[in-house]
Image (cartoon, rainbow, N blue to C red):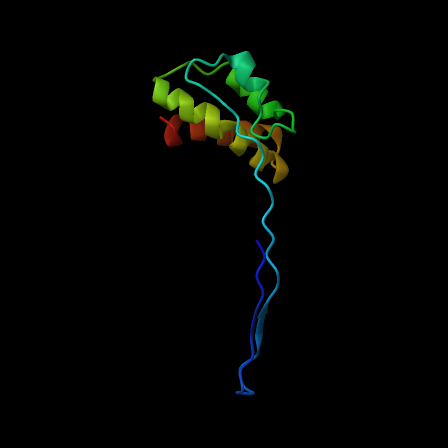
Amino acid sequence: MSSKLTTNNNNQDEPSVEHHEILSEPSPPAVEITPTSTAVEVASTPASSTKEPTKAWVAIFQWLPARTPDSDYWWRLTGPHLAAMVQQAGYPLEKQIEALIFHYNWSVS
């Protein structure tokens, strides 16, 4: 999908606004995670199939207890994404783990 929009105003006091092309990228393949997935299966299936799981995700996933099937599903689905985001943002390992524990206890409980 691409689009280009140019708006020119006749009023000299207002600047013209130009929007450049927006290209959509293909979505990565969906990761199938079920409520019965094991820790090893999920840890070896990162949020993006082209990247390895983060150190924080691997370290924390094996120690957190299972909860309800719904909570576990959402944790296994969103946890790797959060782990990848905080790693890419440059957070130190202990802060990555802290963010994941917060997410586990408050966001998907």
